[in-house]
Image 1 (cartoon, one colour):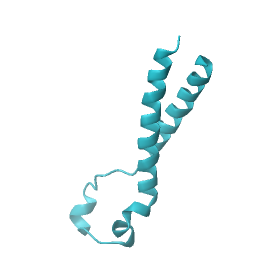
Image 2 (tube, one colour; image 1 turned 120 degrees about the horizontal axis):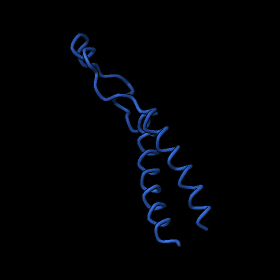
Image 3 (tube, helix red, strand yellow; image 1 turned 180 degrees about the horizontal axis):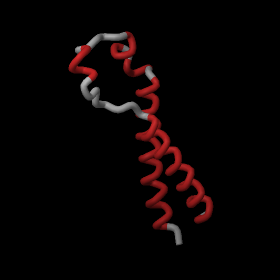
Image 4 (cartoon, helix red, strand yellow; image 1 turned 120 degrees about the vertical axis):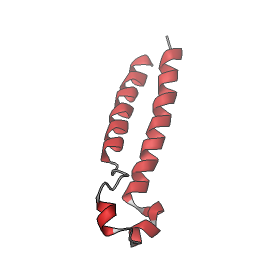
Amino acid sequence: MKTTLFVFEVILSIVLIVSVLMQPSKSDGLKGLMQGSTETFFSKNKKRTKEAALYRVTIASAILFAINTLALNLVK
């Protein structure tokens, strides 16, 4: 049981790291200063984009990671 939880913990940690690193940066830097803000199709439909999917994967894996960590501490 403990070995299974530990393997699941490693898999969840890798998924969490990858999903966080794949998310785009929120800051525009100087790009927003020169171009201004533009409305695009993807900014209007943000719930269906790759960014939204990565956000959901990050939240789900973080919650599962926390629950799994608590379960590992309870199992002896």
